[in-house]
Image (cartoon, rainbow, N blue to C red; front, side):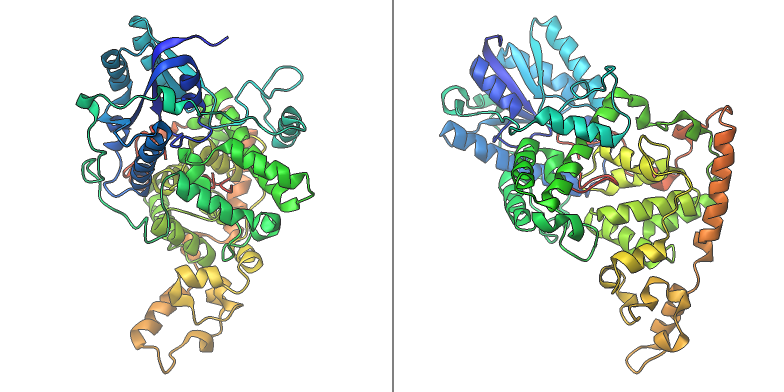
Length: 534
């Protein structure tokens, strides 16, 4: 039986919608009066670059959330309280100011978020108030899908079977918010301030709108409707970066502008009609839950290998290693598919899932660099960054994670390019300087015949010199033979894994740390991660 409270406070974080919102639904059901708040957490924002697409997406989504709350109330007065402060101290203070008996919030599973929520809970308890944590961002939490011996799964296939069995033949129930008009309260006059702009928050506009990305649940719904017409073809189309195959819903899932339950139910309905595409997409949504429960049950993976023996590997260090990492970050490795993938990431904040695997494997298996360097860079750049999925994906390509690829598997960037970007359409989009190469030569320009790229009537001598540099064999970025040699060293390290593991916290190059810091947990920034596709 649910407790009853006279006044409740809903703290929105990564659930920026009213539809099927678990925390809002619970508060409306058991409170006489409900206030709503969103905190732009300065403990997070102050450490981000001043141009960050995720912050702009959050700001748009918060504006849309206010409109949804006003529609739910049936009144245009300010409903959502916004604060620009340190969340773990601002929330207890606001609860005290509003005389709220309980704060309702969707549970977050990341280690830093758990620490923050514990601090908030302790402060509320000291005031005789409650922190009511509810499940919203996953279908099943970390202790809901377990093995027969009561342990968490470490392999996806049996987890997936158990996950589907737990759902059964019905749909996943949602959360009703229809009582909103009766109990939602307007923000008190002292707190009914205009919603902050990006400039008010100390940030600058990005190219988010030029990319066609918009925050808010209406934008998420439009993207979902677009994908529903393509879902049945998803199993095949998702692999080709030049094709509109993915759902592109990752950033909306990350910030909760769409409901995970709604997505799963739509997929389930299609699966039950025999759609292979829907079945594969549903499995990707299950992967999302899988990585959430891995992070919650094994929090050491946030900084260490899931398999401890992999922390004994001596990754490349020093100036050469940092130069190689810089080249990887900037898309200057010499391998077109890798460089185009990094260009996509740097220009848009998105990278196709297939390319996340290729680029990630290249960093670890070809360059011999610590997977944590790449993980950190993706965390800084990805619009849809999610710690659990990003970490799980990087540990998969590094072979150090649960259910990971074997250490001796090395993605060949040339054959991956030939197979999944056969005509080079994706490469030409992000590396237009290679547009004149033939479909065959574009995957390995250093093998191109001189007449394919030498001076033509319309090409300047400067362009020719630039192309001659682009098309040199990328010895600086390591050959496949060197990758194989490096992985023999990994094999040896695993045999000698009793040696002390290096401290990963001291080994990140400056490039991987620029603009980093705590992740945006207030609305924190899967297509994300390496295992991105939703």
